[in-house]
Length: 469
Length: 127
Image (cartoon, rainbow over all chains, first blue to last red; front, side):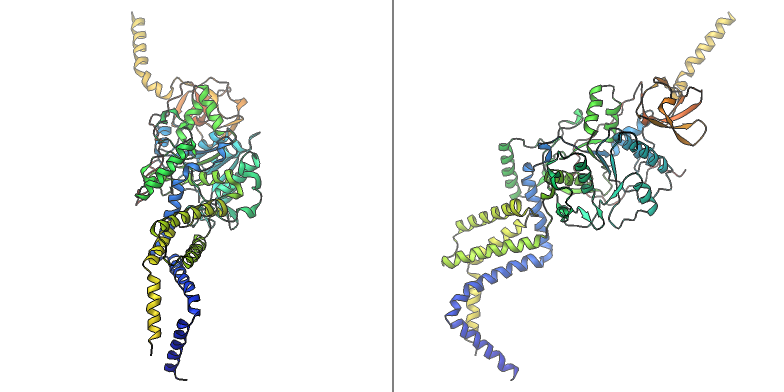
């Protein structure tokens, strides 16, 4: 048969279907399928990176708005996570002291400087110490590595000390020399602290290794089961999916009294938390974000010079405070320099030193154990929510031929939004779906229904087919 | 008369020399060892470090003979002079550390970017 003859016969067949009674049955499905495919193409094709951008914006906005309601283990147990920071000021203060405490007047510190600071912490027998500084190879300009490792080894092997020491190795395929691995491995364990992943995603088990927070979580649970998240810490299968870090806005009391009033006070009563959530949601609509706030970190932290000051203070209450801070705690030792690219964007705290990412992930684990928020493929969840929306609206339209009135449409969008958040938060416990993108698409769909865009399109197509010779 | 003159000269000399002396001998002493078992020492005139049991060290307060950067020189019971790190001890006149105040707000604007990297410190010279 000639090719040209086949097309008119196909058109004729389509025309027959359109004119038949069966068409009335198929038309609503065809409309629904059109909306479904339009939404799918928006989600999957990620035009100009818009889907990814609104995914991140959705997560950021949700985490910022709801940050007052983050439930941390420390509401039930003692706050046991402490970040110790080295920054410009701490180096200046410790170097300018007479006699000096540090050998270096600038970053990087010598190995022995690190060992002296770490020894101060280890003396108080913390549960674990994580060194978030990568020592990839022995520096040719610093001869103190042997002494430093020896000092730490003696400190760790001393009598009743049970501290576990962890060193950052960088990514799984680290460039750390085998010699360095062996030397650090002789006094501690190497853990992964860098990876490629989606925004705010924190892998727990990576290939053959484990990440810093997972190692600290296990060490903490082995020593004390008082954390709510420790119930299933040994069940490795529970921790295969990366963690989506939830940032809380609660701020611990500053350790040093002289820096008490520099940060905004987060809401502490239920009423103030609800009000704060409402205010943030309203601000979000006019383009505000955490960028306009100056909250202190969620995790308590102390600078290296303050640590040394407390230890040497002539006031017994300072020594007691230091003992309370360090004994049995989980310490994360890292840096806070302006010009070193070790910062993380927190939806609640803006840009903070990278070590707070590990600290927050650890808090998530100690608080929720295997029930942590999973970093799941957002696209799949978005497709499911979109399908559900199209099905529900199509069923409604099948029963209400006059369309969706504007007010009811807004109501539908609001119910859809609440539904997405509730299912995400309380049933799936996955990364928050792209609710901003979803609201935009759902709103566009309602407008298309209002202006009968798909109907007009189908009717034109019908006419074309019907009058095709 | 001669005796008085000599003693005056000696006293004046001591008075004039006192600031210089105080650099090496800050009239300070060690009042506490922070380590519980053993401490790292370096014998005077050597570059070798080793550990000494606390029992082998003099009981605090231990006078400091000299200060060199972060190291303090003390005298052991057998008159041997050794250096130990100021990180391991507490001094009688412990100096203030927090001379420059830290900031509480550790966060920065999300827009802040740095298009360079810090160099190594000037104190990081080849030995």
